[in-house]
Length: 109
Image (cartoon, rainbow, N blue to C red; front, top):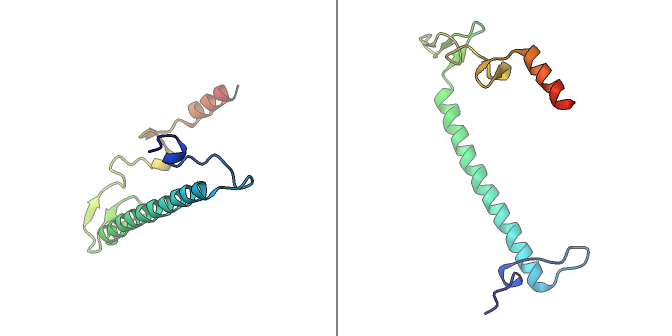
């Protein structure tokens, strides 16, 4: 029994140099494993997205931030509970744009 890297699937050659049959087999095996892994991950995330969309499809966020269901009942008085838009926040706090710009300038220098 061989214990080296080659026996465990190490591919030393490149496509340009040319793969020998063993390297070709292991390279193809790795590619298939990647495809299967991606397909499973996509299926799982797609399933979770479908469940979330179905669970949240009756909710509506009004322009004033009020969250209601399809019967008009209030679910949240302010979208996001604390009223901070994640796109405009700095780790959950209202972003101080001047401070963030100064920090970026310091990093650039």
